Image 1 (tube, rainbow, N blue to C red):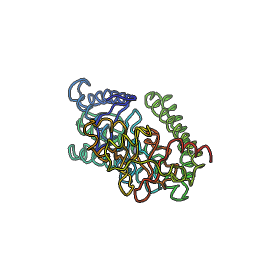
Image 2 (cartoon, rainbow, N blue to C red; image 1 turned 45 degrees about the vertical axis):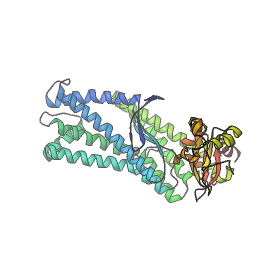
Image 3 (spheres, rainbow, N blue to C red; image 1 turned 60 degrees about the vertical axis):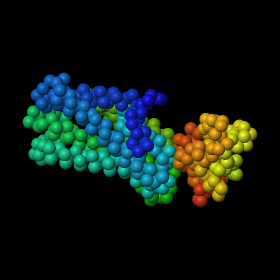
Image 4 (spheres, helix red, strand yellow; image 1 turned 90 degrees about the vertical axis):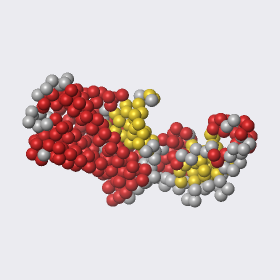
Length: 388
Ligand SMILES: [Zn+2]
C-alpha cells in the first residue's frame, strides 16, 4: 500500500509498520557493503551465493532489530494507555508515533527506556547465538573484527554476521542513549528533570536546549568525518544533527506556546451537553432525527446511562440497506476506537500532539465514569492558545 511516501509492510498486534522510501537506500547500501565484506571474509567473490545470503540475512536482522526497538517503545506506551498510530522506519532509524504525550515523568521514562532495553536484549541474544554457533574464541575475534570493520578468512560467515548485528545494535544503543532530545536519551533526561522539579515545561526546555547542543555537535562531527574521508558517515551524522536540532527547536517553541495553557483542562474549554444519539434507537430514526436534521457528518452515541459508546458516521448509517434500517440498532454501527475520546480532566496541552484531534477535528470528552460530558474541537484548542 502506497500513501504519503510510506509503504505499509505489515501489522504487529494492530500496529502498522511502515517504511519510507529512504529506508530502501539504507538496505541497498547495507547489502552492497556487507556482501563485499563477507566476500572478503570468506575469500569468495562478493556476488557469489554465500556472501550475498549473509548480507541479506544481516540486513534483515538489522531491520528486525530496529522494529523490535520501536515495538519496545510502542508496547510500553500502550501499557500506559497511550495509543500508537504507526511505526515508521526511515534512513535515520525508526519512530513510534504516539497519539499523545506522556502525562507523568514515570510514564515518559518507561516509554523512553523500553526501546534501548529491547536493543540491549538483542545485543545479548546475538552474542549468545554467535558464541554458541562459533565458540567463544572465534566469536570474540569476530566481534573485534566487526568493531574494526575488518574481515578475516579464519572467522566463519555466520559468526561474523552475529558479531556485526551485536556491534551495530551496540552502536544504536549508545547513540540513542545520548541525552540529545528528542532521541531516547534526551527523553530519559527530560523525565528525570521533570521528576526532580515537578515541572514538565521546565524539563522540556532544558532537554530541548541539550538536544540543540547535541545537534550542533553532530553537525560538527559529521563535517569532521567528511574532512577525514568518511563522506557517507559524515553526511549521515550531519543530517541527524540537523534533524535533532530542528526537532529540539520545534519542541522548545511548542513548549513556549503550551506554557500559556498550563493548568487549563479539556473541561474548561469544551462544548458541554453535546447532541448525542441513544444507542438503542434504530438507524432509520438516527438518520431522520439526527443526520437529516442537523446535517453533521457524525454524532457521539451513548447508552441509557449516557456512557459514551463510540461515534456514528453518516456514511456507516447510509450504507445500511433501506429495508433493514428500521430493524438495525445504532449501537451495532458505532466506531468504538479508544483514540476518539479523552477524559475531560486531561490537561489541554496533552491534546496538542493528538493525531486524532488533528485528523478528525474533534474528540469526545468523557468524565471519570465514562459518561459523555462534552466535545472538544481543534478550534477551541487553538482559541485557548491565542486568548490566554
Ligand atoms: Zn528509541
